[in-house]
Image (cartoon, rainbow, N blue to C red; front, side, top):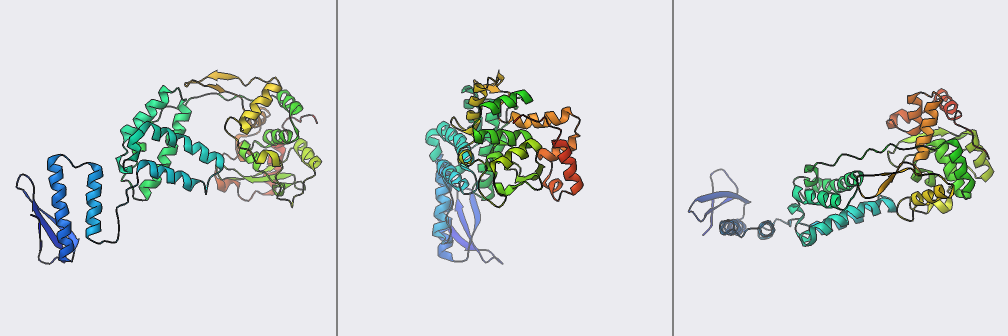
Length: 377
């Protein structure tokens, strides 16, 4: 039977017990109270017997450790959330810092992983292994999911587990041990000025504003629909916004065509009202989101999305709303605008590079923007 004793010069009681082979084990209980130390020693001995019998599973081992902490009256309990519970709480926490669209995007790989795990999702989070994520990747490939989507899904799960590691819930991140598939390379297309004009001809009032902003500022879809009138300075002919994706603040001169259009709308620089209030309340992704609505607008205008076969089952469109951003940079490149100027306008540099534009820099950017083709009213 386990016993406890004190060693010279040590304030803690030490446990002593023999395993099935008769080998003596000695270990500090980290307890100064003899009764608490003996309770810990008995749990050490119990765990040893279970291990010898081959009945010590990870779940049982964690339960034994939790019992040790309880009997020793440490004031703490072992944190052992299940896989399902952890991911559910992680998703709930993201609702406070992410948009509804982002939370919905995060939820999909979590659901897929828990579905693949099945009843194993009830196991402790520490039981997750790289093999589980290999199975996840294999299942996604069998379902015909593109490499790009698999990459993003796995990065989302990695991020969730990185937080668990920082919180001390797991010793390492098992999702980081798997190799991601190579990202599918699809050359993105652009729109000609004539095609943009065709889009404008079939667009509603707010969609017309959205297309002009994207074409003349290279702002991403989410950044466009988030714009408010207090970010538009019609006296200085500039728009200021912070990119959602990178956090980089940008000041972009207004092209004369865009400036004329915004003046016609009659908004006030002191107003916090959205430029496009109806579109601002809609999700950008999903079957009923703005991206799909733009594709329907392209069909109405008779513009080919240039769909190509992907590595998954779904075709990939070379031209979507994001092609307006590519059209902006391509048009500037075609008229000889330097790469560093184009990067300033699109935000492809560090945040420091965009702080405190001088008048000279702004005029350089304005000159570049004004070289874009002028669309008809």
